[in-house]
Image 1: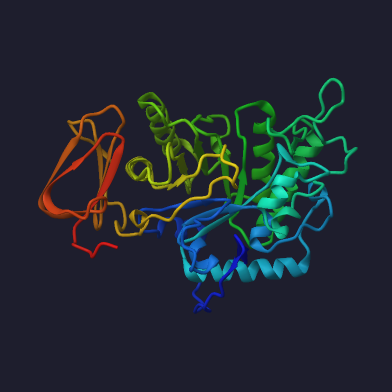
Image 2: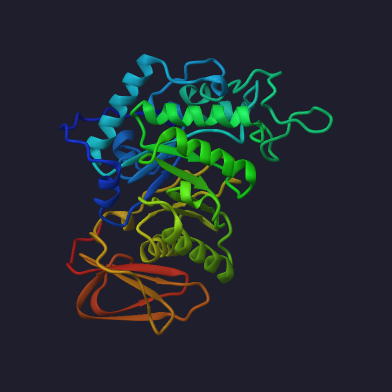
Length: 400
């Protein structure tokens, strides 16, 4: 696999028995990080598969998994070519051998896709095997494209390039559900991811049809940003919370309330995925820690701190931070609200603390010395700033 022009050969891994998806979700150590399409790109010398497998959940298009749809127009495909399914199984085995608790989801496009022509700036950014998945999603004159009153295509979003499909059409919704069923039936992924999710009658009808096609055990993840989705909740296992607004205390509170709601109300097993973006640079590590610890105290889900979408590079690229190395172990309790307004949760190897934006600095005291993952300090007493978080480990590991 090639990213950014670099090819790294991976060493073979020893085969391990594959656990069920519920067992993999429950078997993780924390913190638990997910990959939203694009990778951590700061580990230049590491094999692509090894970097991917640092994450505990990945969603991507079919090409990432080695799969090729069985029609030149992806929107009309009903399955995958047999040879690509073999590649997909090999890809899955490799990733799960590197991380036996990894969950794999395929994005199924239903709202928008590249039109008959791929914009040049996308051609320059993405490898051919990923571009080809979206080229000519539907024939130009197909009725499933969404058109305005003047019969013009409707842009996916303002920058153009992507065009919207008409998912109010019941026949098109059934085609999307069929593709979701094909993804799960392939055995390459554990479920599907649906972008641009809002609560409306057409989307609820769509997710109902998808659940019927994929069965009770496969996973559905939807991108609802920081919104609650009560009508979809019986069918959905997790929210991809692509939280593009994290500049104010009120916005962080909205994120926290939605995450807590999703952890209580969505279908089990739950796979809530919380992402925020940096404000100034990837060096905004206090924001990374706040995102990670908010996920830890309010959910058993996954977190990500990534580049803002408006950048002219592929969305969701990110660094891998040593703070994310799995050292907390398993959760021992639910979170507690401290008198100082911070939140804490105990794990088998330490304690996660989240201090919201707008709060005062929180002083954390332990009966025995703990090691701060943020500072490396080994002491009884620690301080966590507002809009920050920390992991306090029981042992005294060497700092990277």
